Amino acid sequence: MQTPEEQQEKWTQNILTVLGFTIAGCLVESVVQNTTKDLVRSTYKGFFSMMLEKVMHAPINLYFDVTPISRVTKSFSEDIHAIDYGFM
Image (tube, rainbow, N blue to C red; front, side, top):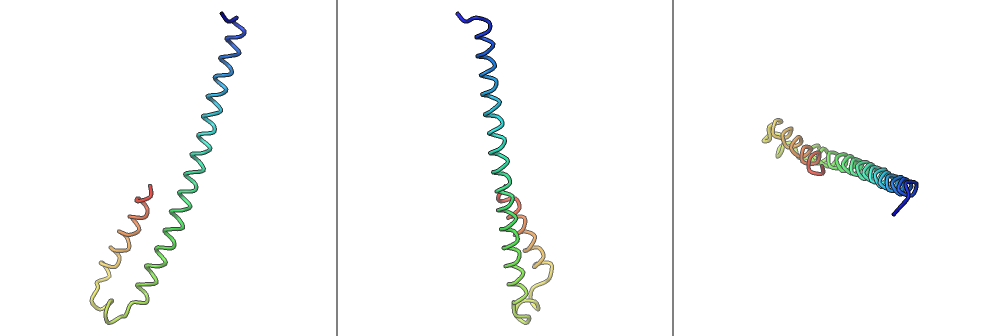
């Protein structure tokens, strides 16, 4: 049987171990969230730039004359929504 001092030391050691794992888990989660946020942000910027470039270089008589602006706006917003919520 353990003495009260040994039990206290064992309990303190267990608490410190759990606390260490908790802090390590929080740090890992923070790194993962920041990495994911940076990935989504860079993907968003690249995708939006690519879409905008394609629209701006589309032939006027084949695209803008036959495509209402609301359809272009809707397409942009749906694609951006897919990026925003697809990675989360």
